[in-house]
Image (cartoon, rainbow, N blue to C red; front, side):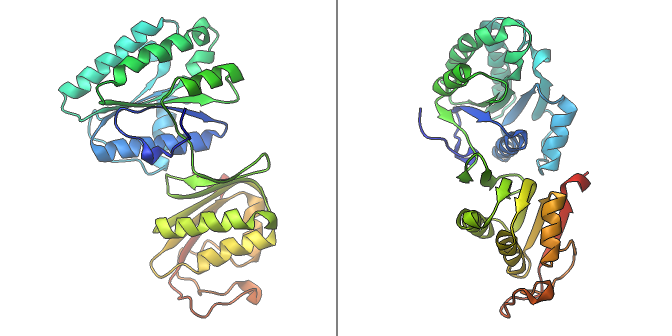
Length: 307
């Protein structure tokens, strides 16, 4: 198995595995996968198990995935398409038929996102997982099918997860700037920016600075997701604030934070202004940079205030 790649590196015909512990991170990757498919003009099917079809649709919209033509994006519960309680070959036949229909409809390819939690339902489905993944491989030879199979690390045992990784040609993961049991800093695709979870202090300032610098370079409108960040010290909060106030005119930053993190940022002058800021100065004169303009727009949203 090759090293993990980011979702934007997937190519037509790839059969990839995604193992995850953070459901928000999974949904971010799935949203990017769907959005890339829409940009390519592919037909897309999202098989969902953990979330209902309506919930999955809402998650995609909240991540700015829109613009699908009629019939281009299908979201279906796994149980409705026979992914539970049947043998592997009937499921492969269903997917093969969907691929044939997509080609007949004029789509350049079919993208499939599959939440594999159906295999831990109270049935012998997990025992057939190896058969399913092996049989599914025959559908990728045309280069028309691209798929991500998603495995929750908290629900699958290590043996199954190891098999899943071996049975896929590629593994998809978020680009991580730092990842240990205490802190994870990674790239967020939809909306584009940075996701940070855990506890963040001055000892992790370097990966934080790297992540923020790359987001400033790549993203016109930067989204900083701190909803699962439980602690931030003043040094790192100041770096976040300086990044926000140093954005050039016309650039924006949205910060979604837990109430504790939001309170620290507010002490440093980061507010949900929705209007021009006085660039380069934090409240109380904590720092000043006279070269920064006053045209920055900033939104600070507490995580529990999100719709």
